[in-house]
Length: 426
Ligand code: CA
Image (cartoon, rainbow, N blue to C red):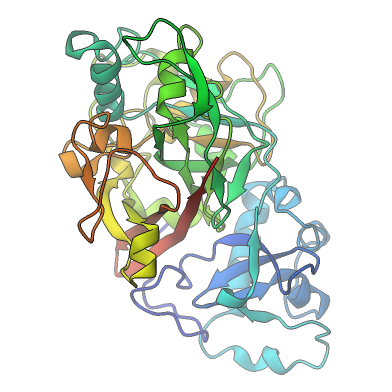
């Protein structure tokens, strides 16, 4: 779908901001502390209250959409499918279009239709039934494999054939801004005879792209690569917090368990896949060619610039901005999101509206494009400059990790906002 950079909203949208009329991401919010959760769309520095505008009759549409906009999560809306999403998106864009602000004075309003984005409390926008995390970055898999098994054994023989993933934990997915308590568990130094129990000494972040399932599939009915994008509603930023010492001891033979189940943070605004379509680019070549059921169908790599910054407690006290430690791009992923979703369902596994799938840590080729502390500090051997003369091997209590994602091109810039979280002591 072509993007029209000249369409603007009557709500001021900063050219350097993330939420122009071409974005219109969905979120959930409380307009005041303790108030019921409502569904909204971000535009500039404001939030459009979808229940308020449907109640007042200024946003019309199918009854199912109106009902869905009165739910405390976006799941019912997800179940409407691509036609329902497109219809609502077009109506909301028209409502917010430049020159169309007169409806704000409609006497039928019983609740404010627009809120200051900074004044509302953002909550998880979606009830996430299941969470699956892939391992789709070749550079990340190679870096971790090198550290855990040595350079000769870095990329295991299955990696170029199978989009590696595991079933994660949905209950501990939290919205941006939530604190993350340092987990405790078993840690064993390589030269120790036995493990000890205590707070992780190697707490880490993982920079990932998440995508929210819109339309599910019945049990027993695989989704093909070609069909997969039609099942994806939109994308969020994901910080898949990880405890590396716990992980290194527990991951054989079944993969991560407690090292990743204590918290996963997501950005609060779900950017519709529709808004990201203009930013599709070719993904890296695949060699060997994937098996037929996994063959790529069109370009589904997404040109999303991703940044990670850290604000230490001392830095915040001193008024220093968060210090950028990594920058990479989601387009570098080896397995694209359509391939990941198709692979997930090839057994007939059923996805449901609101399931969250994530790509795994996104690392590029350059040393400063690595999406985890593990890689940036090379397992602690090369501490990372986090500004103000401070260095980090892994995260310390009080550190705040801030991730952002933006798309630029076609005369438009749009973004994901951010996902942030601060570490609190065990
Ligand atoms: Ca992960």
